[in-house]
Length: 233
Image (cartoon, rainbow, N blue to C red; front, side, top):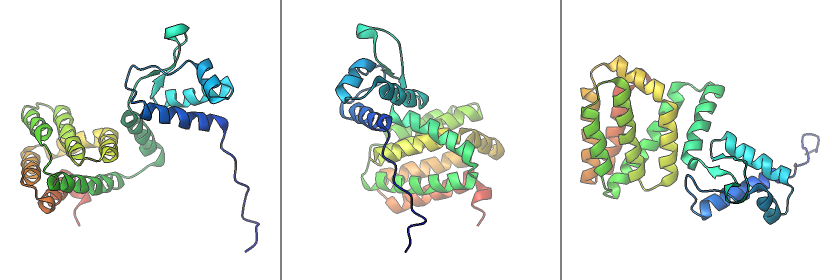
């Protein structure tokens, strides 16, 4: 094998190392919205890099919506954490869907796989279904498609939460946020939401009964009702 198709591997840029360290500290220190990172000068000193590298890393985090950089001195210095990672992930996913031109089928197929697994996991664990029951009750009082979708989203995100896998939960929220417009359109096309409500009752019952197979099947048939043109096979 000749070496004509190979290129030297580029070294990681300094700001990428800074970004990785900041992300690690956010996770390990358990920072939440409103907490402040060390001032730019202090971060540069602690990391042994130039302030320009710190500034570039913070600019990336600000673009992602994770922090808000604020000028100031003393206790007012340092970027403020403005969102949790799943919020930034949702924004990135929306941008990716728009730029990549992904088809709705690809998004629904991904949701299908994730939610089947999550529902089965929640059922196997006999997870707490309080959040699902609450969302179902709120759905009953919805007067618009947008309001219905809001509580429908809460129901399905609660399934992901109940699976016990935080990454799955974050991905599910990102998927639902990124496809909100499609979900509203699907409800409007359907008109009568009674079949969707019956599906939700079935999913909830399967999880409460600790039946993973039924929970997975109920999710699959629910998505087929919501998006019939994608499941006509």
